[in-house]
Length: 580
Ligand SMILES: Nc1ncnc2c1ncn2[C@@H]1O[C@H](COP(=O)(O)OP(=O)(O)OP(=O)(O)O)[C@@H](O)[C@H]1O
Ligand SMILES: [Mg+2]
Image 1 (cartoon, rainbow, N blue to C red):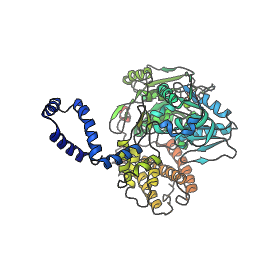
Image 2: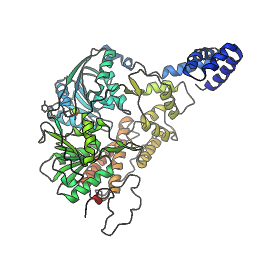
Image 3: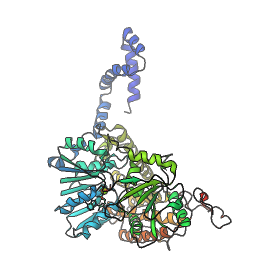
């Protein structure tokens, strides 16, 4: 409340003038404490209602517009339906998605939604190969298959207007995700399907039960067990990557370490390594996964980040943790147990040549933590994520005509009211983009809101530069060009590989914008799609032959340090542990 400081000042004067000596002594005896607040606050509120009637009315109007309580009432149509919810609950690799997809396949009209484009593509391919016409809908791709009554989409693209017989919401535990959780909460509360199949671990089972009690939906739980137990290999690799074996997936938690591990394994053993990490486009991750799964080639080891934790069908015999700590944006912390379990659980896959899964660590010292993580029960989630729709932000903004978009968002987050089961999702990405676009003219509030959801790597200056350029063109009603050349060939060093990653990212953003906004503003969608496919191929070729020292995005492009006598600058941490 902007009048709060004045109100406090006037109220203090009012109390000093009016209160009796005894009351004064009582207040002094209380001192600054909760009891004093409990005693004075109701008087202060009444005082404000008397003295600041208009201000209080507009404050009340503003707060009422930032009301995120009772989110289940936002979807009256879904509330009017009798929805049957089946929760396929279990650890990774326990057949949850498989079971749900059986019902999806049998449905007359069905929707599948998952956290990654990769998962949506996987279901799209699987259904069409089984003769079930299925369209694909992600922020970047819209593949409409004629006569299709099924659609596979990413969670953010779920329609809460379309009617379905069966809906599958995969990885439902992501409702608790600090940043994206709201997308799953919205899907669960709003999807109009008679039968909804949730797939996930037990961590959100209790809160789903509570939500169903509020929505009046019927809930059935199917507990799924791993087809084969995951076993820990206690002997570890004793710190030596020479002990890596065919079918291993070595997991490292930074892009640099991934390339160092690949370099070390290919230098010191006969194994060749595929590579999978988050900055890679889905097509390239799939290409690397197929290369690894294919037995008839020398690429029989996979080196991957936590991106391997979800979505890819990988025939992994053993997950080897190179280390169990990761940089969380400001410091290096132990990898959370839930993530360790998710990743370790990728080992052993029913129907693959490695049905029994093994997991271990490179270093003996890490083994105890791995075992501790695997033993840890799923911590019960107490709150799930929410984030306002544009309409809610718009009606809130109408109360604060002088504030710009970033300040409106901040005020909304500060003022909004939530029920106990929900939290306001973190939105650093949105804040950063909103602030950057402040200087762009010609954008409506809705344009700004929509641009904030574009898939951008906010830590990559080049990616942010292109987003700013696209938004500026849009604001000036100039058709946005791609303004990016095709690389001549695959990468010869890490700087060029990073550049390919960024280029693909920018094209993927252009595609997303071309679907989000109108064709006239982003007319080169087809060209962007073709370039993205070619770059994904170049990335796949580059990864297969990558044998260079990794850079970081910040250092990439800076003059390379002097080469030493044997012709290349040694990667610091890993190679030094091997005698040349
Ligand atoms: N009843 C079954 N018959 C044959 N194959 C199955 C069956 N259930 C699961 N599978 C196969 O086992 C593998 C793991 O199944 P699925 O992907 O459904 O597990 P999940 O619990 O969803 O795993 P994740 O947690 O990793 O998503 C898949 O390759 C799937 O095709
Ligand atoms: Mg699954």
